[in-house]
Amino acid sequence: MVTSIWDDLKREFSSGNMITRLIIINVAVFVVINLLKVGFAIAYPGVSPLANGFQDFLHLFCMSSDGWYLLTHPWIPLTSMFLHEGFWHVVWNMLFLYWFGKIVGGFIGDHHVLPLYLLSGFAGGFAFYLSDVLIYGDISFALGASGAVNGIILASAIIAPDYIMRLLFIGDVKLKYVVAVLLFLNLISIANVSNTGGAFAHLGGALFGWFYIYQLRSGGFDMSGPVNNIVNAFQSFFQNILGFLTGKKNKLRVEYKNPKNKPATKSRSSKGVFGKSRGNAKSDTNGVPHQERVDVILEKIKKSGYESLTEEEKEFLFNASKK
Image (tube, one colour):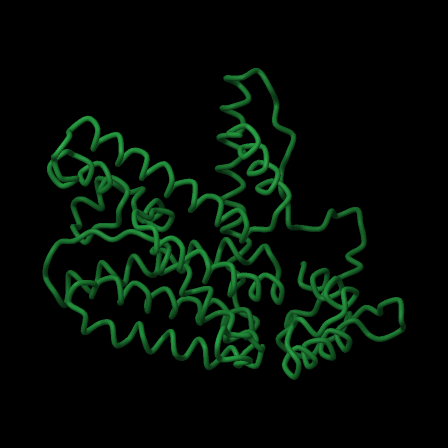
């Protein structure tokens, strides 16, 4: 059974989109952390996690508001955004990541998902640090993907505010109202003294999500390229080490750029799905200009929701979202 589950996970990770991969990583880390927690409990029976060393171990990967700890543990801004200890914490974060990440990836391309997740997570960690240092003056630790996920949540509302979501017991609701409620709940949670830093982390991540989409919409700097290049560099580095240790060469590499020797038949204007094309618009097989057809599909989504699209329209929009 374990082998079968492992094979399924490897297949989903290699063939799925970035949202699928992020969910798999977060859930896998959650499982490992809780298995280690069980191991600490067995090794020190009757002793609380605070006293048996588990919390100290967990803090090695948590974001901290202690400047010196942050300086001597430079990996924690990254590891903390993939780290969950509580069951409902990881469940809700992964559900939100799936629901809203699917919208972001569908509209602006899968290659934007990871940069948006990482940079929003870093922004959330920075907001957590500043709030503790400048407002509360204490030292605490934070973990979880909430800052990163909130960046994706707000980005989805900026991209497609009139996208229809079907909520249980409520029915069809426009995305902008769902996100507005979630942001309001985060805002009022600042008054909750048990998680003040976490609330600021959520809002910091959300603010960066807005900034990321604003940059794309205004034709500013596209942050996805440098982030994906850095991720690819680290991936290649560790794959080369693994290949050296195992004697195998890994030939798999994910690239988002079009090969230079192939025409970019799906090329887009600098505005992309955010505005009208400024030339270089391509035509589809039906004779309708590429950007005009995208606009028609987006208008249909605003009026009737994503599920109203035909399979051909969904495929066209997905391909159009790629650079």
